[in-house]
Length: 141
Length: 291
Image 1 (tube, rainbow over the protein chains, first blue to last red):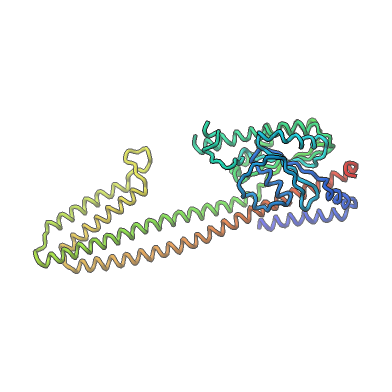
Image 2: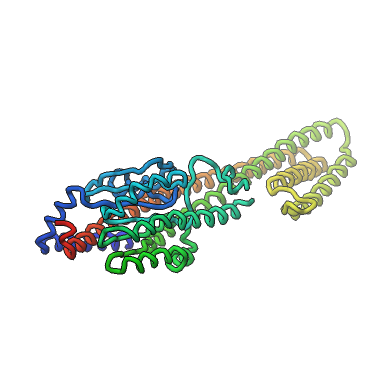
């Protein structure tokens, strides 16, 4: 029942997308512009919230099952080309010591190169790499 | 620090970090040269906060986080800055049904595992009782052939059986709370009770055998065989039930992961289409930004 509803919704959106693509004359040109890498999505957020997973899924680089993979800390700004939507995804490293790497993405925001900013949060449920919670500094404090 | 306290302290600490991480982003969006900026706040890991979803919405849409968004809106204006919160609630609500099904199956598995373990204990008790009683009965029968039956031995066995039986009943009511003086684990208590009842069974049946004849020994062996057969059949049924539960559990786990994949793919499709359509609208409204 639910899956049918979801599929129906997707079909409606896809139909709307197709109709708008046919109806609006300039749309083809816009799509071509996108294909040249015009669309830039920047993903921000604290460490362990799921930025890399989202970025990889948006870019079509990882299957949806990657949400079940263990957490791996990113150490630098990742730039991934989108697979079917033209453009790229920029993912910043979220851990506090690596926040100085955000500056290069900030300069792109100021220059107006970024179309969409996604801030990823998870109500404090951030993953931590490798260690047990008993080894966490907060636990030992 | 307990696990629960750590979880509360950790998430609280990380929520502060989320705000801290957003602060520099806010200041840079405010001075961005772009005429139209689109921003999404994506709240992930819904399976962990689903129980307190109202609090989560309150936290982001009316808390300190929303003040930052409002500050950007005040600075840029609603024409230049568009912001949206993204929660996948309906899909996860349905996913929760899968999770509760998974929990039910797991509970069922735990129940049947306990039942099987208890049945094993009962079977061992019957076998031990039957075996020792048969040996005792045979010895008494052999000795009764050569000399008169010793009633004092029978009385002694009967008394021991009664004492053991009386001793085993309070064991059932021993406290299991760790702070109690007589606290024992449930596992230990069960073993003790089973041991007591085995001894009682042996003593009482031996008493009957001493008073009776070899017929008692034969009857005992027969009863032991019947009971063993019944209990083995019961165990077989339990194992087949366990197989069905295992199969259902595997099915639910498989469908849960498929469902999670489905949610993720729906979510990604939704974002992609939103981004495409919104950017297309943006381009049509402000063609000079694109052409």
